[in-house]
Image (cartoon, rainbow, N blue to C red; front, top):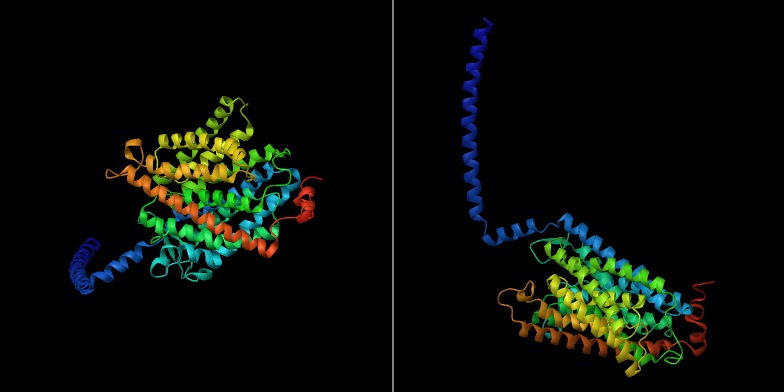
Length: 468
């Protein structure tokens, strides 16, 4: 009996299942037909917009990498550059140098979110020629929300706040770098005024011209992966102009002014090298193969430049020095910046060697011959190695030399574009810095008194000493 009931129940279940399956199939067919009809009724433009919106979701891995890269660039400023520059000054100006760098970075960050980002990367550049030099539409980050995104160099996007933060650290360190030409004699108040004006009329327009779509140099097709023109040529030329206007330090060049702590300079150099991976590899805006290329290039170009500087010292009859090692490291980091993702490793090594040789002679021969007092050689290393890197990128980009250029790459044409970009950066920096420094001079007096300069800016400007 139980078996018969079970069989009957099985037959009933089978018939019910068959009916349900038939009904489900009919429903599925109807739904598919309705969906196809609805899709056909939607304009293709709407479909494209919907697909694009669906794709514009930040990759968490890329976001995480870019946050890390941003913090690495901050490490370059505080404590990296502060210790590097601070160790190179006399002990009586150690804290003054570090304070100027820290305060400059803070000021740059605030100005960046108020109007700097808008001028460099805002969504609505002015119509006509002006749009080649500045942008707009995002004062006080008015166009940025947690949901907005910034494009990378592929189909990926990152959160716009992350992009804003990353580019903010570039503005901060560039402004701090130019202080290498003015330390040990400029007023703190003058630094604050000069930097605020300089960022507005020099850095933000150059960043837009080089890196923003529609920018003058960007549209030329110039190659600047991480800031050869925007950061290093810009800061180095500005440092020289500011130093010339400010005048020589009291006692220069007859009075010895050696670095007071090469130990701290070496520590700062190491932090700069570590942070530079965020600077260079981070400029890809993604954690991909090109970021890896920028990473290896940052290793090998720097290593080659460091050893080359010490070798040149030996050839010129001097002992290979710790200062030479640090100077070579910085020269290598600078020269590879525009070429980081635009060169093969062998090309990066060549750039490191060439830049180190030229920068060495700029610092040890050109500077004394011309007699200018550009205190910490921001021009001799950053501007000179930056120019070598910017122009050299047009050469090492060639696929024949291991670069990532395509089969249609024309080296001569690219080198001409690179030279034009360098010239624009040099002229814009020089003119804008002249305006910024004279404005600061008019408002603050620019230079400390002779008594304060002799006593030291640590006590005279800040009321404290680095060493008690």
